[in-house]
Image (cartoon, rainbow, N blue to C red; front, top):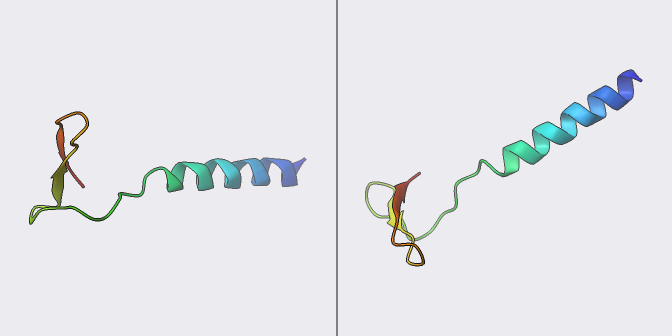
Length: 44
């Protein structure tokens, strides 16, 4: 049972960590960019 809890915790951690990575490319000098589909501007 302890192994199942550890495996589940590791899976949740791995999935949440991958969604938190910022994407690269197309950033201005401030580390920001415009989303051309929505017109929004955000920074990383």
